[in-house]
Length: 144
Image (tube, rainbow, N blue to C red):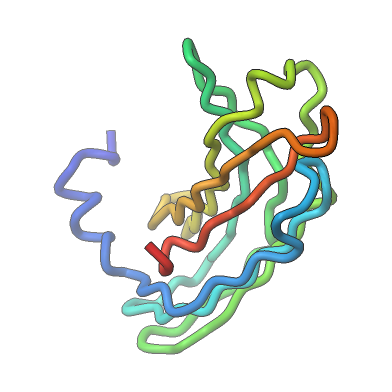
């Protein structure tokens, strides 16, 4: 389909990430998550929708948990814009603690009228603290 490599390369630089903030962070895994990003769009994005998911990386398979979807908006070519998306929390029902206490990914995908432009991956380390409470630390890809 339309996800061949040539297409991916063409849209790779449609957006330049400038800043990422994650609130709260270093907190229990299930807590709400608000992510704000500043970015520059190198081309107009007329039907922009952000989608936030969490991927649990288990030894044998990967499971994706839908977290939030933004309202549709538009970004002008060459503009520096910002976005904010919030999830009430990561619903980990049905997972065992050992499946979650691992590295996961918060995935933020920008689509334009249903066509995926880019995905920003935020590596998430989940560790057990204070008995059996799972804590998450989400890392900005700009800090790597």
